[in-house]
Length: 217
Image (cartoon, rainbow, N blue to C red):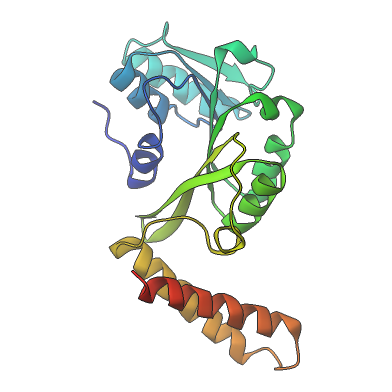
């Protein structure tokens, strides 16, 4: 079995055997190779970077999976919806992710796994506004950087305001350190903001929510 980074390994943990996957921004297709080897299903791997796809094709050939992993140049969202029910979109900034998620074809995908390299809270707000339900999240530490991986489902369930602002991840050793890190960053920022500014009041509110969440576990 191919070895994945902590980040990719946690993303893989969100995938089930019955998922029909398109991996957008597949890079060298390591995640796809891992999933196909684990579940023996078909996976669509797409990327706009041709050099990345060359690396993906080389890796796919190395593991003899040319008939299982189908390469697509671009975002891959022109695929027949009967071929996919799950999207993985990871390793990009929030602007690129939102641009891709704004495609009308995304609305027909039941399950979306998102890992943004920046501002996961903006992705969360966008997805919930577009009638997706934030089902669960994980905080992962990889190469001294924290990442939040989120699973969104097309369902009638609705998230709370708390989940919209803070997220929906379990409190464990990694997420606790992440919370402390966020509190420390906010505390430093607070010192630079005049008391009268609304932004300062918002940060204080978020800080208090984070502390309450941590102490309740």
